[in-house]
Length: 301
Image (cartoon, rainbow, N blue to C red):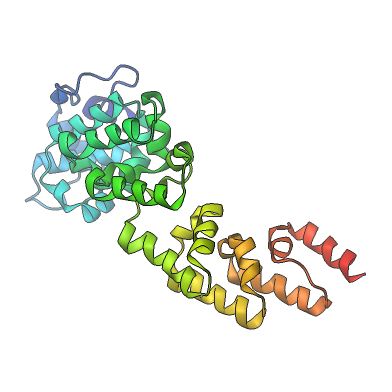
């Protein structure tokens, strides 16, 4: 819901962020203008339900809400926000603006990753941008594109997560850094031992060789993002059991796991079965409903 004119005006007086020329991060306290207590008290988001809540806490909630961030959700996901000062929050906002992030991007970024609001600029955030620039060759003018694609970069440890993931992916054969940065960035914020390695091992356990499994994830990187229990297992059981198809088809078309079992795979398989025809897996699933209907007619004669 778009903020009301009153909310916009209140935001500009309480939480104003210069849109074009952000102030130096060394002066975070200039972000918030003087806050008239009466103005806060008259605002519907400020109504004091709990007398013990401090004025600063109420200002914080109000500022987050007007900025477009669900304060309740943010506080629930990041309890450290309760004790964070407005000055520290504003310094983080200034820092992100100095890196090319725009004010309109902040609600989504903070909404997805409220932990950013209590990060340490020197030890948490700055190393991420150094990683993007030095390890992924992302120019500074493209920082915004990368962060908007994957805000989780800003909550990921460079030493413990980003660099190990990049090294692992490179060893597997991921050579296009631009694709990793702008398209498959979720792989870089994934834990190697808990997320990436188990997916590859699962494919090997299905009967693929290590080289075949590696080739499959290179061909379709989203395989690394699918749940073993909720995606791989039920879809493979249907593939091998009900459909009676061979591993070779999965090797050639690993995108099979990206399609909905209930809404695409099962209905299409049943229609093919009833028609008594044989369609390659890719043709059966990739075609639109109209194309699929035509295929059934043509092949079925």
